[in-house]
Image (tube, rainbow, N blue to C red; front, side):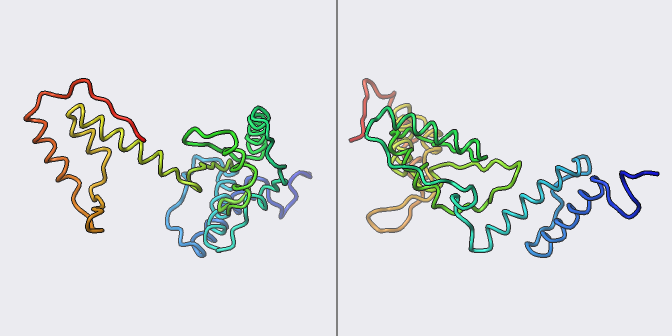
Length: 218
C-alpha cells in the first residue's frame, strides 16, 4: 500500500501545476494577461514561483494601495546619522548589507557623500511605495535615481558629450547627446535638434579642427 500518496491526494508536481494554471487564469481575468510567460521546459515549481511574483506585482501596481518598503520588508527605525564621517561610511555599509540580506539590491548611479546615501537608505526609501512587494525567492532591485533623479549630473554629462563631439568635429557623437526635439527658451516652443547638428556639420567642413581647447563647468 502506498501511504505517501493516498488516493485522491495530489503530489507536489500536480499541486504546482494546478497552482500555476490557477494563477494564469487569475492574471488573464483580472489583469488582461494574453500570452504565456514560460515554455514547457521550465520546472513547474519555478513557474508557480514566478507567476506568484507577477501576480503580486500586478496587485500592488494597480491596487493604488501599495505598501511601503518599511511595511513589506519590516524595516526597523534606523537611528540618526552620526556626526563622525567615518562612522557614517560604516553605517552605510551596514545598511546596504541589511537590505541585501532582506532581498533588496540597492544601487546608486552616481557618486554621493556617505551622508546622502545614509539619508536615502535610512529615511527616504522606507517611506516609498514598493510595487513589487516582498516574495520569497525574489530580489527587489532599487536604483536611487528612480526616486530622486540627479538632473544636474545628467545635464553635465550630456553637455560634456556634446562639447567633446563638437571639438572633435564629430557630428554623430553630438547627435547621440541630443534629443530630436529641443526646447527653445526664447519661445517656450520646440525646434528640430537635427537642424543644429546639420548646421554644425557644414561648419566643420570649413575648418581643420580645434587646438589647445579647454572648458569647465561653473
